[in-house]
View (tube, one colour):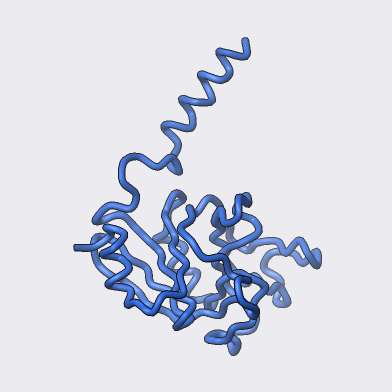
Length: 171
């Protein structure tokens, strides 16, 4: 019975939309890059940089993890567990959308790109580790970023174009 269960689970993972098939990303695939040197986020899709937005990020060195991760959770009006704040509430610091990724072997609910109830803080190094965007921006990006999308968080002094080319997302 356990062999059958293992086989079924393996097949489910292989056809899952978050299972990386081949090189990831490839030209045309969606990719998110956050450059902490500039506190900016770029969304790359269809081989082009589609959007660049200013963000808020970690207030101390290494609060926002560096590396390449996978987006594994998406939520509308996310619930804020730390302070028991319902999704959609005006005082919810996560804003209206959550796009979580698997940094530091987490489950996509610890680190993420999310909205904010304090848009005046965008551009600052102020978060506990997440990447914040204005609600209207995260709501737009939320529709374009599927589960399984790769996200690179870096502090290198390189342009988004150079970073995306290095990763193979654009020519």
